Image 1 (cartoon, helix red, strand yellow):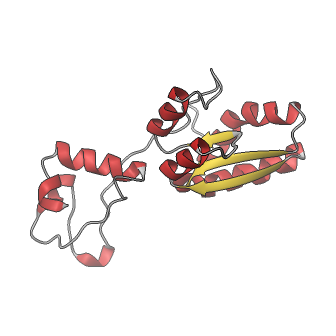
Image 2 (cartoon, rainbow, N blue to C red; image 1 turned 30 degrees about the vertical axis):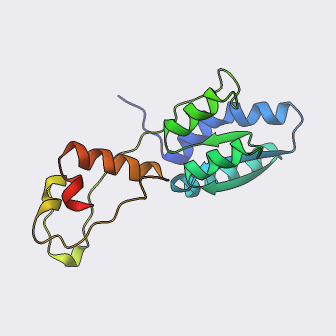
Length: 164
């Protein structure tokens, strides 16, 4: 039987060794750059970790690309939780990440959502091309991972040019 963790519990289990390293090294504050989409979950982890360790965790939430640029410009981060591997790859290529510290924590999944009162029946992404669909919203493809994922999916489905 598989063990199922909530996102906050999973993050605590996976990040505790990383946070523990910083505290053991005598740091009183741990700076965490975190993708905006994970902010709520990480806030819960932060509170639990601070209560258990006595260390202070400072969160810097934002778009993964923006956080990457901040680090490239010299901002210091003890932990970077990106919504995409692209930003972490860039840090590693630039020598801005400590070797052997990368951990894959979570995965993303695209979903299609329609307002309950819209009367639309969306059973698949292809239904977005229907006449009843007046507009769609996605994250900005040039700056947020979910936008890149949505663009890639729509291109692969042959819908990008007609929808965007």
